Length: 417
Ligand SMILES: *Cc1c(COP(=O)(O)O)cnc(C)c1O
Ligand SMILES: [Zn+2]
Image (cartoon, rainbow, N blue to C red; front, side, top):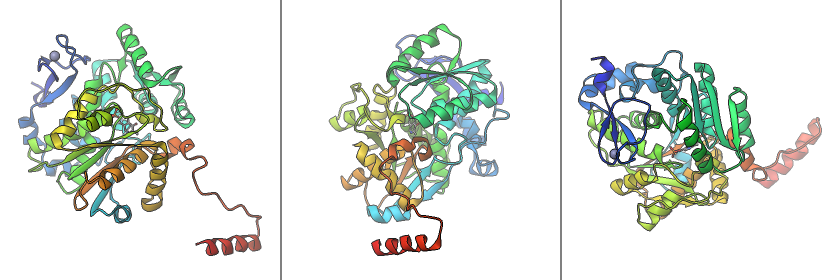
C-alpha cells in the first residue's frame, strides 16, 4: 500500500454513507447525494504533528496529508499561508475584545481564496490524467483556473456570466484561456456546465472533481488554528456562495481535534451573505434547512449563487455549532469595504464587505459576544472589484504643479479636519 493510500480512505456519500474509490465522480449512484473525501485520521495523526507542520514551507502543502492527493504537485504555485492579522483598530470601533482578519486578499497568485481550491483541484486533475480543465465561475474561480491552469499546461474552458466585473474578465483573459461569457446568471452557467461535463471528458473543478476541489478550502481553517497558537476561535464569520467554504472550515477544525493537534473545538460558525442573494441566511433566519433558490441581485457578484450546492449542509453546520447568519445591503457592503480599508489597511473585494458588515450585525444582535474571539474570513482583493466603489470614495485634490497651489490645498485640508 502506498503511503498516501494509508491516509485517504476514499469517497463517501454524505447521505447514504456508501463508499466509492478515488475517481472523478461527485454524486452517489444510488441516492444522488454529494460525495465527500474521507481519511484515516489515526494514520494521519501518527505523522502530522505540530513539529512536522512547523518545519515545512509556509504554503498550503504543509497540510498535505489532509488533502486528497497522492503527492505534493511539482512546480505548483506557492499559495496559501495567508496572514492572520489582529484587527485592534476595528475591534475598538466595534466594541469587541479580540477580532482577527484571515487575510486571503494577499499571498495567493490571483489574490483570492479560490487559489486554495484550484491548487488542489488541478493537482488532482493531473493525477487523473486530464488534459483540459474547466469551471463555472462567479469571477474569482475563472481568474484562478485561468492562471494556475496556464502554468500547469492545461487547456482551459472557463464559463462565466457575461455580466461579471470588467476587471475580473480582464484578469482572466490575460492568461488566454477559452473564456465563454454566457448570457445568463451563475446558476444558468452552472446548469450549462453540467451538460457540457456529461459530454466532454474534462475536469470541471466545481462539478466532476468537486469533492477534491472543495477539500482545498480546509487549508484556510488549518491556518487559522495554527496562527492562533493551536486553538480554534470562538467565532468564525464566513462569506457564503455555494456554502462549501463554510462547511470545509468547520471540517478542518474537527479534523485538527481528531488527529490531536488541538484539544477542543467550541467554535460557532456564522454565514455572511448579501441581501440580494441570501438563500442560506434566509433559511437560517426562518429556522428551516430547505434552501429556497433566489435570483441574485447584488454587487457581491462573487457570492451570487442563487441555488447553493452546499446550502443544506451549511445550515446544518450553523445549527450544530449554534451559530447564525446575517445578510447586508449593497450600501452596507460598500461602507464596510471602506471601514476595513480605513481602520486596518486591508482592501477587500465586495465579499469582504459582506463579511465585515455581517459581523457588525452579528455583534449588534448579540449573536457574537463582545468578550469572545472572532475571526473574519476576508476572501478576495478589492483591486478586483473596484467598480463597486466608483462614486463612493473621497476625491483627490487637483492642483497646479507649484508650491503655492499645494499650500493652498493644505490649508483647506487642515481647516476641514
Ligand atoms: C467563491 C468565494 C467565496 C465562497 O464560496 P463558496 O462557494 O461558498 O465556497 C467567498 N469569497 C469569495 C471572494 C469567493 O470568490
Ligand atoms: Zn448515497
